[in-house]
Image (cartoon, rainbow, N blue to C red; front, side):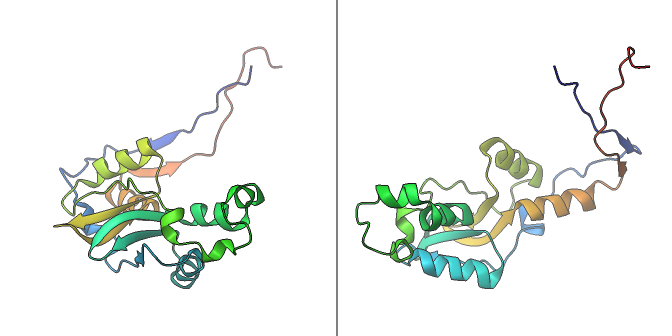
Length: 171
C-alpha cells in the first residue's frame, strides 16, 4: 500500500468575502465561433487568441462549446477518423457542430465565483460561458478562478510540497 501524501498549508485566519460575482473575474472579450464553422477554423481561432475553449453560437444564441481536446481528438486520433462516415474528407473540414458539446453548462454574471468553481470541479470542465438574457457576455476559465482565489485568499501564505508521511518503523 502506498502511503498517503499530503500538503501542509500555513495560514493566517482569512475571512472569505460574502459573495464575489463571476462578472468581476470573467474574460469579457469572448471569442466565439459559429456552429457551421470548420474545425480547422476553430483551431486557428484558438491558436491566434491563445485560448482552449470556444463558445459555439447560432447567432444570437449559445448552442454549445468546443475545446482544444475535442479538436485534437477529431484531427489527430486515427481511430476516430476511421469511424467517421466520410473518411475521404479532411477531418479539419468537418463542422464544429460535429465535435462540440451541445449540453453546455453556463452561469450568469451575478453567480458567486465559489459556486461557479464548484460546478467546474464537479462537472470536470475547464470553462463556463457567462450568459445574460440569452447572450454570451463572458467566459470564466480555470485560470480566472485560480486568479480570483489567489487574490481573495490572502491568508494563505505558503503551501509546502507534497510530503510522504513518516513511518515509525523507519530507522
